[in-house]
Amino acid sequence: MLIKSATGSDILSMKNLPLAENGQQLSARYDIWLCDIWGVVHNGVAAHKKACEALAKHRENGGIVVLITNAPRPKADVIKQLKGLKVPDNCFDDIVSSGDVTRELVSDHKGGKVFFLGPERDYGLKDGLPVEWSDIDQAEAVLCSGLYDDKNDTMDRYANMLAQMKQGDLPMICANPDIVVQFGTRLIPCAGAIAAEYAKIGGQILMAGKPFKPIYEISLAHASKIKGQPIDNTNVVAIGDGMNTDIKGARDFGLDVMFISGGIHDDEINEDGSVDDLANIARHAIDGVKIAGAMRHFEW
Image (cartoon, rainbow, N blue to C red; front, side):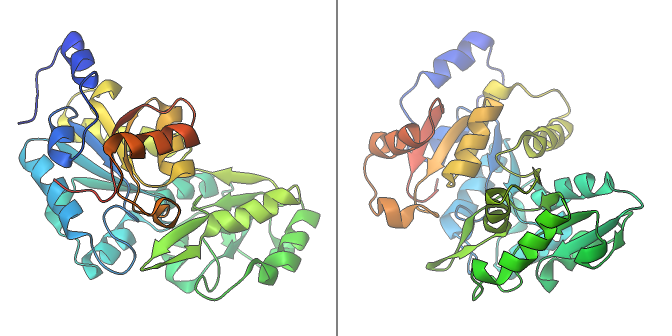
């Protein structure tokens, strides 16, 4: 059962318990779950049914679930995708996307000209923004949501474009810091891969998604509104699979982490292992991270 009225000393004692091995144990220790989507809730092709059930049970216990994603699309588009993948509505209270946070960065260029680099499915990210969309040679900034064809493109396609952007000293607003994401049994490149190439040639990068603080600040603000009172970070856990996004971002923001090893790192780890084994993988990869628990696939 969810512990709702813990004092500061109670919270400390709860965090000194053994590592959580399942969602039920996690629910007893943390009211607020900030849960990654790709790699935890679904794999890009289908929902992870047991993960969705665990999220729903936490909410039934009185907990709050905010899905936090580096998807470069507005919340409404993310919800549409979740419905298509059969993710049930009852497993989350709210969603915060990198796309929504990114829109605030683009709005800083109000009245200016911005070049959009990304697939047609992300065009909803542009709607209503106070900028003029232009060709690259007229732009003052670039909004990148991903590759034009993430299932077939290589970085070679973008070399000349990035060189032109660098020559114009254009800042790139990256709507998705992820380098790769799980799609079925494949890993496909994301906007973060293009941003990394731009950074290599000295380009300026601006990001708002994980592991950067703005997306966590907004997520906890939403959780606080749902709860109707301020949120104590010691009562929040981040659930995720990406070392350089979910795990690093939670560490930098001072949050405990439930590490899910069976997402984008599954091919590297490729075994269930004990909870301590999986926790140590995350600890060794991201120095200073506070691991609350670990599982290969999230379930109750």
